[in-house]
Length: 147
Image (cartoon, rainbow, N blue to C red; front, side, top):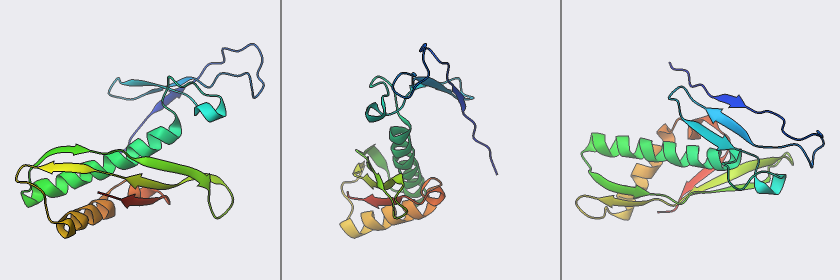
């Protein structure tokens, strides 16, 4: 149905190429012209001034959920004024003993034009958003919503 592309560019800047010494900084570039400075997480010797792949994964899950939620609300005539989320991804060993983002917890705070929705209605909208989210449908990571 569609293709989504990213270019990843890395160049060695260290004299030695050993695990503790090689640089982790690299660039993600997209067809839109946007470039993002990326690196490994700081716990894996990356730069704290860059986005790491794990952060980007959590952002992608949260962003896709939000965009799907907004689309559902728009189709139902529910006007959303603001949507803020503080998503957290948990890197830990999965059942196979491999490190993985095993769970992403979303904590959206939503402001509707006409005031708050009943908790049950909000929960149903989030359930629909999760079921229809492209990213959630693409990964094994558990995703939960705690409004």
